[in-house]
Image (cartoon, rainbow, N blue to C red; front, side, top):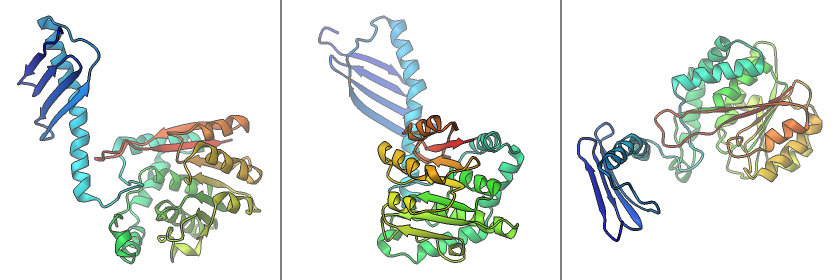
Length: 315
């Protein structure tokens, strides 16, 4: 640009662009989200100098920048409506729940209608919601300050449906944190037991303060084993029907967990990875052991976090 800046303004679209020799200054006003953005970013390419090309840049900016304002608006809402700092929780969109129902139906050879009913069963469980709120209220202030008392299960609803369909005798989850996924799985086991299919849950955690949600009545079917998960897994001497990896998210450690449980798996066992959006460890384990692998991507509702998903390995 021969050392000169180039200004592109499109007031109708709320776009303001200022190109310099080495940077781009952007401004955007989104009427829909009521958010104004401004940013300065490095630039290496020279924009077109003709008027038609400049108009197209403004149009493209107006198409792309609302994605950023949507996220910024979601962040602002989250800052005042949630206390969580890590391990974010959220509801899934209705469309995403429908997609999950059909994905589960494919994996479990069941009906999508039944899968949706199981997930609704968990979402409508007033006793479970009250338990989460009550147990959270009992925690020290330092923990309450970073914890939401409203359960938002997200992809964990898929775990629940799997447990309701498989009727597992033993569920093992590595990485419990507060115990939101664990207590949900225990809720599934209690319902299974009432239908004549008893089962147990073991969660592994290295932090002694974790797992507080797994208390009575859910502790009747579940417990937390504190210590290194690999040590705990190697000490399990019975078949594991449902295994969920949600501990150390390094690829090597995840792979070590799968190797540790391999002798305890049967043809009907289901292995779930909570890290399959960022790791190929379960995919590789499935290939090495003759299992199928599928992945479901969750879509959070009204949340800035892009979501994780569920990796399934099964025969």
